[in-house]
Length: 162
Image (cartoon, rainbow, N blue to C red; front, side, top):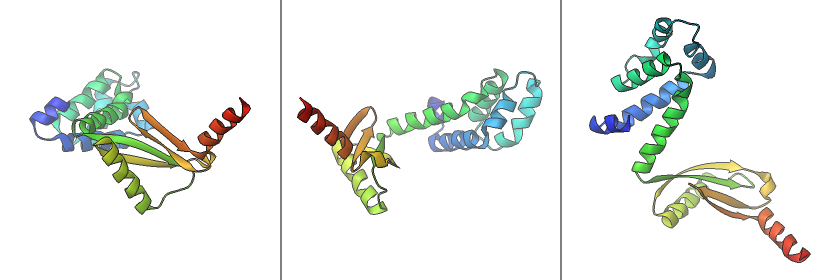
């Protein structure tokens, strides 16, 4: 799918299309479109309105998923496509978890620091976990940096106990 999108210079259009369809087909709709007891022609007809205006390759993918009773995979396919596009563009995903919510200015500074440290553009998600007590944990790809107060106290407790 990415090769087709690249060949047509329509990567953003494909990404948007897949993400929109994945969002439009809520779990109940996915179950109905994947129900093998409903004739395939009827399931395809039910999806036709949502597919109108989408790129032909995306429409073909959705039709194939419906025909093979695999339409439930659409959200994962959309997510994987987006990850491939981001990877190709040098964008890394980060999850920053703090003990308290951060203001937008603080978030921007964290993203800027992560971009300098990784040499990549960062698409960050922020979460709050009061159990951290203070500090933060940052996961970029499969790398985790734990600078939380909870972890530091756990380490100190272990050192004092030994």
